[in-house]
Length: 132
Image 1 (cartoon, rainbow, N blue to C red):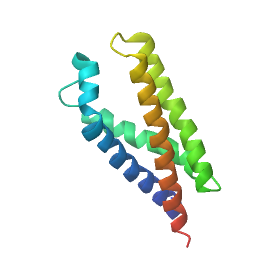
Image 2 (image 1 turned 120 degrees about the horizontal axis):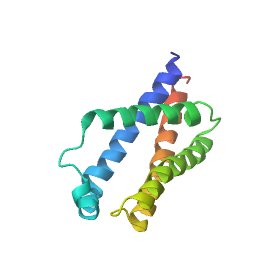
Image 3 (image 1 turned 180 degrees about the horizontal axis):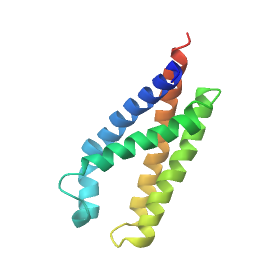
């Protein structure tokens, strides 16, 4: 695997874990708990969470970070990927789960859009620092 790809993956993953950890653990954890109450586990299942992060970051790197010719393009395509991915999840939940409100769907979609754009930008910058 080329060094550029490794740096892209690790940079994207680290940014994702830090930002999403702050969002879920510090900023929005209590809000999600109050909105979703009994739907949430007391302790998240670790294996599916790890698999999600590894798989989602792989998609970010393969479909956005590596093909992008600039950090601006990585940010734009990352935002689009985040909107599509989080939109699919949130709109499906809003359509099928009683406790999933339109407000929660919109808030989470906005977060996913920002998060993916930011992480793809970081991944792009990490990948391109390797060649300097």
